[in-house]
Length: 450
Image (cartoon, rainbow, N blue to C red; front, side, top):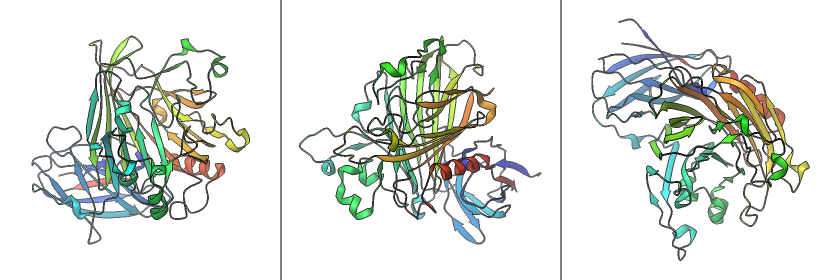
């Protein structure tokens, strides 16, 4: 059998993965790094061979077993993706032996490096924050916009050792960010609002929320856009933190919305935000926003899948949406100088910002301002235009012929990250330089043979 070329999803470049009928139980896999820099925890995703109902796998590199996981992301009952991470030298190569089994594996044997959670909120005011009995769930859905306040941290949250994201379960579907001081998993104990558990913050050096999202695009959120609604005076008409660009189109009206944790680790988390019947530009659309976070990675991969919900045709490649980054500190009316707003764009799909602001309006729980640095990297093929606004940098984007848009987002927490998370303190200059290098990283090439 001829060798089959598989492309890994490295650094969020979600390239097509070829599925093939391979009846062999053991595969030899060659991993090649085309980059001139070494990569730590490079994400690898390989199609599980067809021909048997494989339920687990073992990955061996240089005679050592490395953690992996298998996921069924289309929920057809068959696990179709194998994921793991590797350290690989610049221009280096590794050989892996992968053995698939029809027996269930013991996923608990591997150290847990990622985590995802979602909770129905316990509103019993007689119980303290640490005594609350929130009800864990992997799926929540609604047909009217009323679940946001019923969910603990307002939707799903997911993390690895470096970063933590949450996605709001409402029409904004914004991403919010949590800054860490040391590399560790901490959401299960702090439940995002670590300011409510000061003893754990002191004992385990917990991080905290670092950004005030408001009505902006936040980081990497997909929204609609309508140029006809533009108002040059909108900034003057709305207060800080409540600012909403009149051209921004939220994900409403809709018929059905769902948040679904698809995978919880140990190597990666996968979270889907599904919307059906979104009325946008005279069409009814279905939208699946998939967030993939691998162990050890600062970035999160985003895959947007759009489909028709009105029977008017499935080719949606001419429809324009937007994503990008907010200009951090734009709402900081207390100290414009301290906000230190910086941002950059290359007009090809890379944009980033760096600034400082209050992470929340409650200054009792959040008594200090926090710096945050954001970045989005979009393949040029999806980009329609650059839209530079007062409070955010956006790119117009359109789906490909398969009605998919794939891009990446990343961030850092300059005021919190210690030497275990970053080699030297972050600055606007170092962050923008990191973004430019990150934007250039090419995917690991994976050659699989029988």
